[in-house]
Length: 160
Image 1: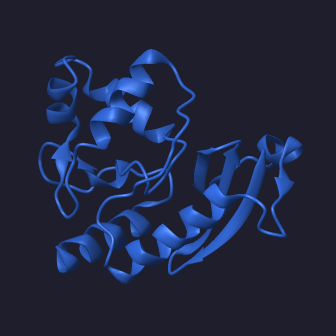
Image 2: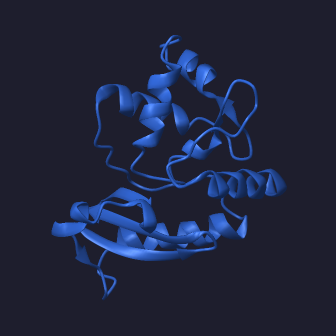
């Protein structure tokens, strides 16, 4: 698997791809380095999917891209994949509660499990888990840190 670093306004993202799909897009300061042990840095930009991911992230941070169009490989449990697919249905600049997402995925009593699946989202930003908040409107948690989540939500709200 190849990887590259993307310098965002919120810190570096590590993006990893296998063959023709993006597998990971994670904040560098949150990743377990053991996970990267078998990855090879794409220093010569051989991976077209990584180059395209960086291009689309640049557009996202500039406020000109609202939806990512990338080939993704989702590695997770069936429930996690169901949750991550549900996250992709939340429109740019909008939020949804964990409970609402649980209902939308057909698991109305699984709000906490939805939160756990969000925490294990391997494709931060691309699969927008930052758009999920608590039922009382509070920001809730985010694997990349609540300051990043607040920034992302505000940026999307401004560019909607």
